[in-house]
Image 1: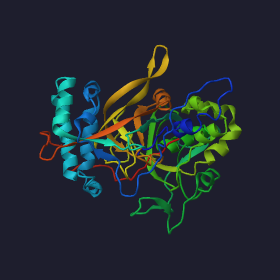
Image 2: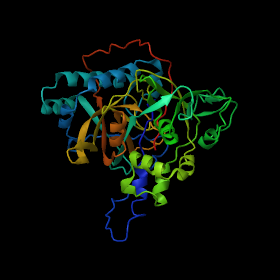
Image 3: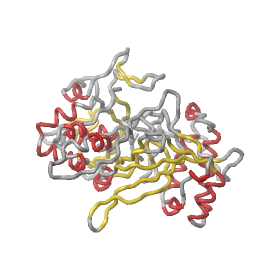
Image 4: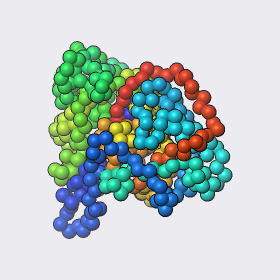
Length: 422
């Protein structure tokens, strides 16, 4: 996947630990508490159709953020052209054929819209609009960010590069019914702690080695990585299975122990913290029992649908309750660089739902792919805002005039991937 290259790092930590470590002289006004991890009852879906036009969002801003959208829509159509995609439909009243027609019709809108007002009117005329229930049945969704990191690595270990990332072990298998990984023959697989203590020796081959243990941890959370080798060339790897254990957040545990203030928690602050306190690293990352395995993967990064994800145009959600390869519209805040630093700005724009998250298991969570590299990572680590999430599906009897060029694609072997978060 790119899967999961994901910075869920602050999410719940900020919300759960917000008041726990404030100084007596400081006045901190917390946000109203929201349970973003609230589960839906079994069988219920995240979306509700909005039949009252007064509840529809303003789509004007989507006109100004169209760069990369056509590419992302085409990737929807690549996925939806695969016979295996049909098993996940219908979704509510949306058939597989209607999902395909929706991406095609949206592509036509992108190509013909002459103004923000024109785009808004075409969406509202041609599409049914659905809103996420969110965590509270009022549409509250917590948006976080993820990215693909770039680190130095070596294909063989040496005195400096000695922390391995592993290929998928031979004794790991995926249950065809549940989709979860476990030990061949049954039973849970090795935990992260056991793997870090060498339990994979003789069972799995290292795919590369990193110089920093926490960097290696980050890659197993993000589920994908781009590495700079000694000769300056790049080496890309992607998700190829996991150990089947659930994700737990080391960042949250540090906030709860008052080791890091919640408002200061980010990927960069965690890197700095563990450089200053290496004695805390074993305990912190050992709390996350989940571990991801890798294979060489160029041309990505790829999401859980096995198609590339596009910066600012792809999102990750819980695929048990959200529809795959669908057109979404998000209204929230995202961090951006300004002459005075990084600050949040209002954001509204379209994105394709093309990824999933190991730590994204509710209707109240959405992860936003921001791109590749350390500068992007700094923004991803600061992405944490409440907002609204909408989906659009073309009305029955309406279709786009743009046919998908991907009727019988030749793609890499299907890999069922699952993104992770810090």
